[in-house]
Amino acid sequence: MEYMELTIEDVKKLSLDLAKKIKKDFNPDYVLFVERGSLYIGQEVSNFFEVPLLGVSASRKKSKLKKVVSPLLIIIPSFIKKKLREKEINSNTHEKNSDRKVFLNFDCNLNKKNVVIVDDSADTGFSILQIQKKLKEKYPEITVKTACLNVLDKSVKNIKIDYFLMKNTMLSGPWSNDSKFHKQFLIDFQHYKSGGFFCEKY
Image (cartoon, rainbow, N blue to C red; front, side, top):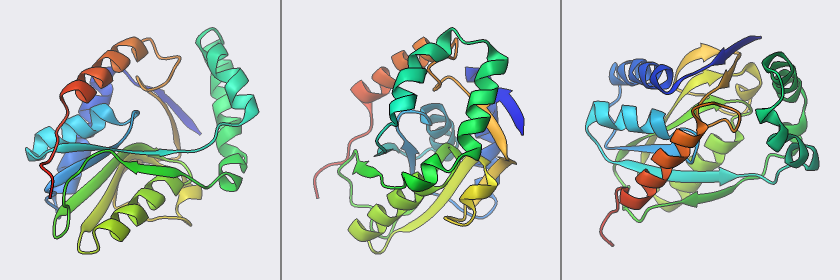
């Protein structure tokens, strides 16, 4: 499996490519990004279409092993991190832990609107699937498309990602705790949260 370490500029360039791919047959009124990881992707896609950016979250309970290993990733050599990530991807851990707590972190009426959900990677697809389900429940007349930089084969049986650039690639980007760009990513995310887009009540 290919492994890619992405800089902030790498992510922005790839996100622009993703936006151009979406543009071929879909024009969203809103871009929804999966917090926090796909912030830069969401910003680039929303800027491209000149539409508002909204955040959604889908969290799962961390395994005991992940709680222990996560802080150590910063000091572990790259080739070991690659092996650990590959082992995690190839395991069925996330298949068993498919439940997500989904929060729509905005108060907009998205009925009759075109929306694209963006994320860095669809590993199992459960996060995007359950976000999509929540949106359809709250806004039955919404049109939803999905877009990721990368899609893993194991996600295909759970959800169809409408737009993607890569397949079966392990991505380590600014959203990763061990990235040298992670501190800047956190600053940018807090900046987004302090001045993000809000809709009027409806």
